[in-house]
Length: 195
Figure (cartoon, rainbow, N blue to C red):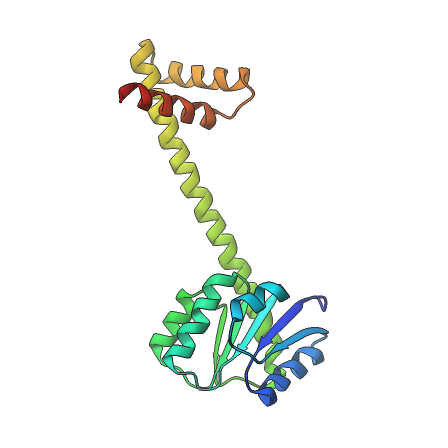
């Protein structure tokens, strides 16, 4: 892991924050920013724009946890969260909120680096899966739009499915556009004419 990472440590307990800070410095991370004030946290994170976030909550109540989970959903960064105690509901909520590493009773200086490395790896893996899922959804939606456009062309021109597809493809090439853009235009125009 590069020492150039900017790491934000959020902890209202300065002693515990110093344990994390020292662990990060020992691991070669020099850009460590400490935040002890929990008000306006999302704005503070946006201003600092860290690469990674470490949150230490000691013994959080449900409201504190929910606040941190809301922060996690909003910032889209690798997040390692340390707590002293947790129940299964909190762990599930942390995973749902995108917390990359939810560590119970594990705040020791020497454990900070491997936990941080794991949080970054999990975040990257999750981000990759999310991007692949979004790409698959887009491809499926595009395919449906192209199928609708083919249906319109088949009906209006009396063409076969392959001929309709070839016509859409040729039109896209002539106009230097993507076939999905041509298909979307056709579907929209057809919808307007039907109304």
